[in-house]
View 1 (cartoon, rainbow, N blue to C red):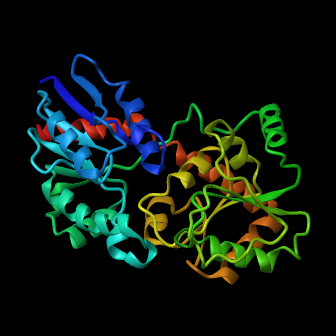
View 2 (tube, rainbow, N blue to C red):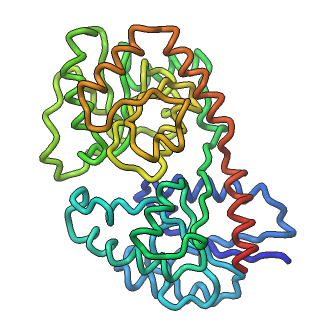
Length: 346
């Protein structure tokens, strides 16, 4: 049976966020599947800048266009879809840790996510940990939740050639050894732990800089002011991320909570040595490929970083293990698993 699958294109529109990486990667993987068996139609909501109810109504109408299944890469689905729907729920941290998400929009998500989960024919998520949390917090049957690990675009995320590495680092004005964190700069992501660890480390490694690449989310009153040896790069173009990852002495992933943490996988695919917080998702997805430290423990993070900085051989082993590990993740594989799910649902 040839499937005609609708695909909500709203996450592909600016401003892009982490879910955009999932949507773009999945669509690339789906493009490699047999067109005689699967047709994917990306549907953009009418007037996407309007409020959420308008967008949901627009997507409600879209599901009535003769699709076998409609897939939503983010937390929302129409109230009364005209065809079976699947939805990707990447994490439920806004339900399990509401203190991390102040403001009005998270209040909407706390209502929307459980409703979306119960309304969907099937739910996709990237890890077993999040699947268990969805079942617990959204009160849906476990058989409705399908774990499909995310992929990595190896046409982009791969170790750069030496000339490309040197050119990219020069473009970023990085001429000293550095540690790196990539992601939104907010307390939930553990940037406060990293800055505290850096305060312990910087006198021992005076040649090093700490480089933070990502949007500064406001308000973030829990963040201490960065010392002079911290570089804030802000948003970095995708084409420069492999250079940024590969050039780092170590990439740090200090988050207190994640659904999958794609930047870690992308860093590993570029040959980076990664030091990550020991949270359930990191432990599930990246065991054996990264060096763990106790979550929220600045002294533990400083000790882990000191160990890999002083041991070149261990650092190289982590780089090699990470590269090998990342080879098992692809968007083509994720696309095939989504396709199998859609056949079941349709």
